[in-house]
Amino acid sequence: MENTKLHEIVITAIVVKPSRPDDGLGGEGKFLITRRSAAKKRFPLMWTVPGGRLETADYINLPKDTKEYWYNVLEKTVRREVKEETGLDISDVEYVTSLATVHADGTPSLVISCMAKYAGGDIVFQEGESVEAAWVNLEEARGYDLIDGIYDELAMANERLLGKKSEWKRAN
Figure 1 (spheres, rainbow, N blue to C red):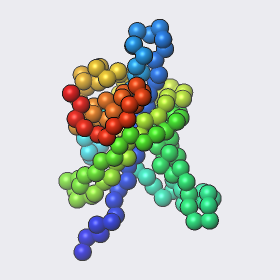
Figure 2 (figure 1 turned 45 degrees about the vertical axis):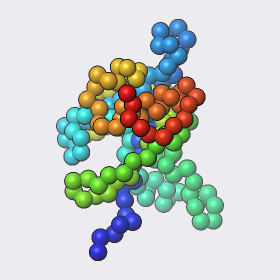
Figure 3 (figure 1 turned 180 degrees about the vertical axis):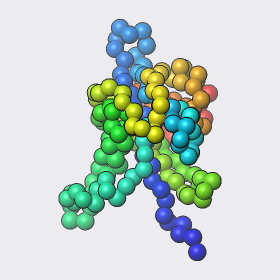
Figure 4 (figure 1 turned 180 degrees about the horizontal axis):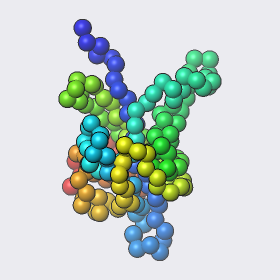
């Protein structure tokens, strides 16, 4: 019998670089999108946001925060993944939405999508992960071959920047 409780857990970050009052963006920020390597098994050469899989090493060797639990595991994981994949530091990680799929190889995957502020650093790619990056506003993102659903997540993040919260839905 197949284990229906075991999922690959992935966490992603919509990295936001806030706008300056004089940059002509009308108060909206820029979002970091990255183009996946051609060597990637899933979605090669498509544009997405940085992130990756939760690994037990993200917490198992750390002291527990309480007698039984490690806290902020996802936040630490997404900071590590963004740093590894892009060289950037992020702060203020917050939840946006979640999604699930069963990949063609039969692996069930749960993705937790977050947004975070750009906190510093220069883009340096991890070999085999990403090959390009762009800082885009929501309208500019339409011009990229994004993995299905990513544009809608960017739209949700943009709404949050404007103080509105919502559940995932197709953006216009």
